[in-house]
Length: 340
Image (tube, rainbow, N blue to C red; front, side, top):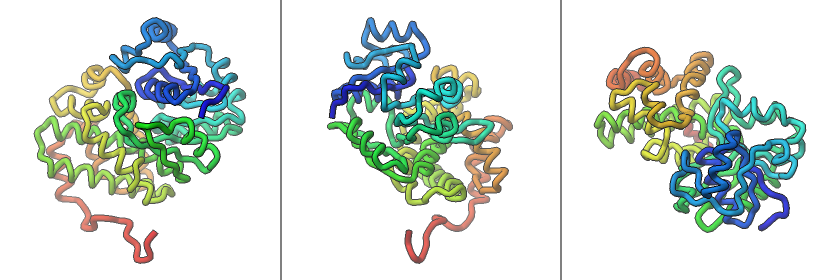
């Protein structure tokens, strides 16, 4: 399905670039906005984004641009792949241009002071926009390399979901729809924290049983938290929940896993983040999640444990020992006799 209007992708990072390429391969004209004019010029000249997706050729239909207002004016569908810390400040001044547009967040994070998810920030900044969230087990490089991938577009706006499915769906990229925007987005944000723990466990030579235990208890913990806030627990059995958690906790291509791995090798948090050279959303999410779970008194031993490792001088071995002693007796919290 080719449209006359271009599609905007905001952000020059790895996932924004992968999605821009995918759209272009589906016959769409794409305006990829980035803040850095040097990066835009380098992509124009070399058809490659060397800092974020080295070796991936950028499709000729992807046009790197640096003028945000004109990009938004030209487009009806806008994908937002900005870091969580920059999303509000970049889009706030352009709020009027987002009215009646379809705006889809690709960013998996939580704003620090407000505990708002990215789509909630979009709603606050642009109340007239039609808002959706794209989330799932989607490592940017694999998407760009055409590994078979599935994702979820989540919105209460059914027409928006159908439109995004039509534009993004391709031979190697399958797009499912969900009405549980909050649950889908929360799953995408929370799993980054647990990927750090998984990376640490692998670097420290812990066994497959241990890693499986950590991932499964992480799923229980993030579901418990999300359901407390009103998400549907069944969302966490889908691609945006367990699917995303598995890939992020198992792959050295995951930034958060790599940060954890570096920590497990004995690097400090600063050194680990510097080694990765990209934003690892899990570190930001951990701080806000720890504060929120304390405030709501939701039991999250892995979050508390990782916080203790990164900011209170504890070791992973101590945290796992505490987990083994303190874990409650039930395995699955959401079994109901009537079913869901």
